[in-house]
Length: 165
Image 1 (cartoon, rainbow, N blue to C red):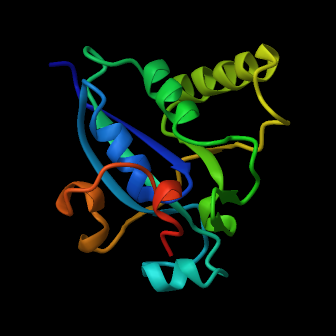
Image 2: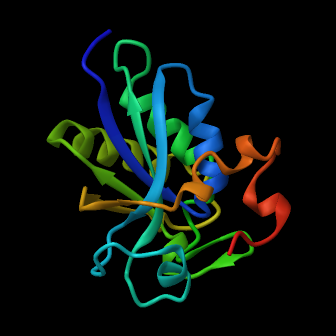
């Protein structure tokens, strides 16, 4: 196994996004949490009430010998609507924004290329709203949020179940 690498994405409610990434072959582990804001050690309640600047995110550890970062980007794009600004489905607020937090210059380049290809494809219903930013401090979400759907024997997405907040 090559050295495990890390990727961080925000694509709306982290419950469904985590479930999607957990099922990608080559993904070693997933953790949901908060990133991109200015409040240290935020809680779910803090993030939900706004004002922290954090997004709900998924941090993925993956084996690049089994899955490429580009494949993870494809999964990211297909897991949400990247044209919606500060919302996904019924969930509204900056904590649900579409964001790619890159950990290396190679990830930044791959994400930028992927964004350009998606924009140029003409398949989007509007302009891309996804942010591309350097990976900030990651704060692990409370344990009851980790593998939320799996622990409850649920399938689907946050959008199909109503608001996650």
